Length: 253
Ligand SMILES: [Zn+2]
Image (cartoon, rainbow, N blue to C red; front, side, top):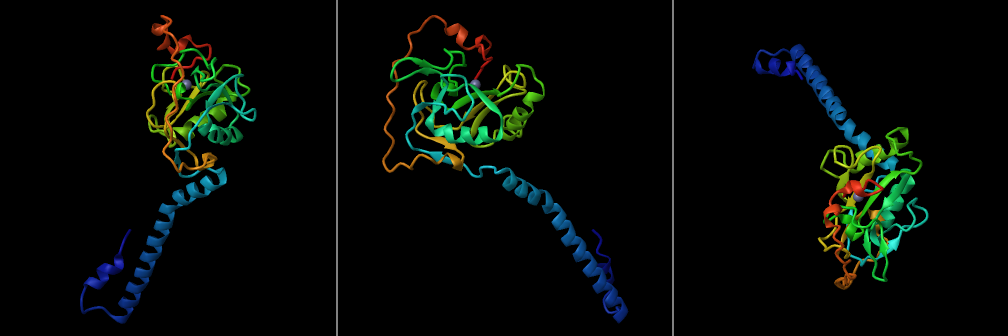
């Protein structure tokens, strides 16, 4: 940016009326350029805001302290039969499923309080968020197992959830995709929600969710700890459990 008028002004005392007019015009020109530059520099921000509104992005997230339950994934969200998750992420999953053609291949993985078991058996890494019901593995609803055009929407979802590697967008805690072993196009997309630390096979005190996930009423009393179901008996398969590749879903974390 040039301020020719400023230099004219600095010649004190010798300025004629004409020079003053030129200076004023140059000043005006400078301000016009400055404002134009400012608008141009704001344009990407304005476009992003407009895009965010158009895309219906969920906005600021919140911590949900309402007690959760392990529940079946609703039929409106395509999923493998029997898959379950923490009830507090269902609304977020519904939001995602409305916008991306996802198919959930695993959610909560572990024993159920009423008996029985959900998800794959110890196919995830130790400490996986699947053991708390706040993680899902996703593939395209009409995918054929290959990294082809059917994965394009999943690529977009993965990029939206994690615009920069290892810097997931809240409420996500960890996103497993391209660049993460055992994940990626043609394998699966893993989404973990931020949550309070919790032992395996227990529900977290809070889960971070989209505003859309506010279906649970805010707590007026401190949450009661969820009694953990009976831990599964060690079966000697511990060595296998840390290798995600043993799962038929290719599930890792
Ligand atoms: Zn996973």
